[in-house]
Amino acid sequence: MVSNVESTSQLMQCQTEAPKAQVEILAPRDVPLGGLRAMPVRRTLPQRQRSLIGAWCFCDHYGPEDVAVSGGMHVAPHPHTGLQTVSWLFSGEVEHRDSVGSHAMVRPGELNLMTAGRGIAHSEVSTPSTTVLHGLQLWVALPESARFTEPTFEHYVPQPVSIPGGTMLTFLGGDSPVRTFTPLLGAEIRIDDAVELPLDPSFEHGVLVDAGPVSVNGTDAAPSELAYLPVGTEAVHLRGPGRVALLGGAPLGEQILMWWNFVGRTDAEVREYRAQWQSEFERTATATQFGVVPGYTGAWIPAPEVPTTALRPRG
Ligand code: MN
Image (cartoon, rainbow, N blue to C red; front, side):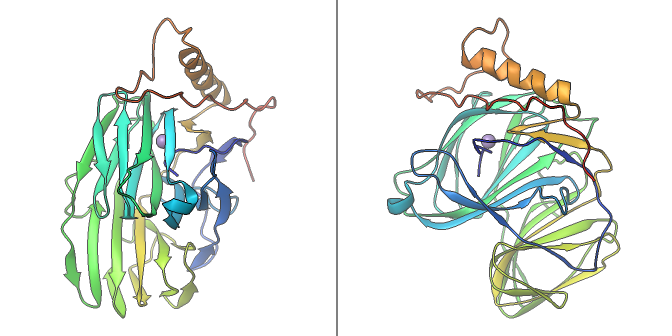
């Protein structure tokens, strides 16, 4: 969720793909996250059919999960590059620590955005007060012009806004003061009966259904499915009741390479990120790119083995 801790990580070359239909339903795949009692997540991005929506490049939906059964979230320090992580909870509480010294609680309805830029390490642990864990872990790819920016962490609490037929919490884009590096939209929409919203037609959008089913411009989408709306779509009509996350953005127009928790551009670059993290993990580094996570005393997460074959573009 917070981290991609799949034991077998696959290199994925990601780029903006042409639309295949007016509403394209992207089905989730179940991914068991690592750990003692692996918590399952439903992943809709990236996938073979589509790897980017705007700059959104990763979408995991998890819970509602009884932490007395699942053990909750315990993700030890691990690195990121070239992306922003967007943590959005519907229920529960997660303690975030990172190597720029941030220490924050992730709570429902509150945006926590970590910009990895040139490199960061972080940990995420659900708190003892959490009984049900339920949320989204999203990543945004940084464009070439910003991908080596200094790492930062931001917290923002959007005000719920009543709209006809529901309530909207816009955490990125719109009135959100949080800076993004490409034009983006991120919002939770609670649908009482039906909601109609104008869209920026220069954006592509995805509607991730949390509670539903929800009809998206006439096409039914089940919980954990992601309904894709191509550039040129001028409005979205959501018929519930239900709850969704609306993700939008201008097409990135760049090819990115995702492997494990890294976003880069070339096979060699991603291998270098891995080698650097391993040298810091083994405490053999002479310089640190990712740093240490103050306040976290347990073991870090080692990088998986890198594939022996070089990445080739898909498609
Ligand atoms: Mn992470």
